[in-house]
Image (cartoon, rainbow, N blue to C red; front, side, top):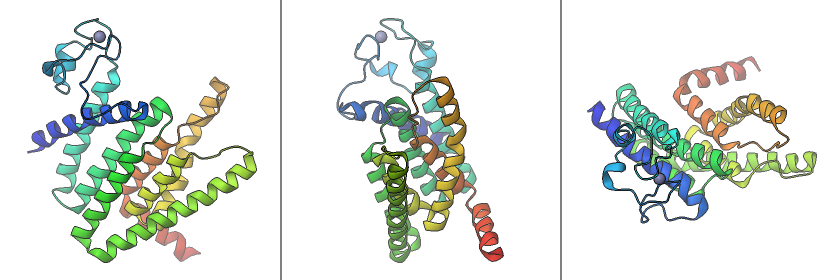
Length: 252
Ligand SMILES: [Zn+2]
């Protein structure tokens, strides 16, 4: 069963790759045939099997022999790994489903934000709907509505941070995608843990930002991957973060 879940993960992983790579440049992700990034040759079915094709082709295009971006293999393996981890660690339950949604949205944002500095709306919209439906099914409509309000709360907080940042730095401080992502974060984690996750993301982004500032003049940082990673970390260690927050509140 875990192997089947792994295979399903690799298939979805190569789909996320297509979504993250094609949607930002307004290419149809579902209907158009997959092509080589280099020679644009349309790929046959046997060149589209996750992991297997990469190994058979020895990481090179069958037609032009250009190296295939190793990111493809990485995303497929990571998605498969995350999916089977969720199945083995949680079993089929509420946490597993939320984990799958979180990792899927995270992966697509990683791909599109690192490649184009774009956080797509569609994975956020689909992710929020899935989270709402999962919460409704497992926890009831009240919890689902509370998560919606938490999402709006975190969205508003992030928007406030952006306004303050824009005034302080006299330029756009946060992208629209980052603010929309805060909504999903609030929906999944609730307001308190969502805020906690926002703070964590700034620490995660700090080393990258410093390196980017030192290496090149460009001081633009794709913030989405760091938001997504901190959402991921807080969700996996949710109990630990909850008790940490309670400890802080008690001592205050
Ligand atoms: Zn090629």
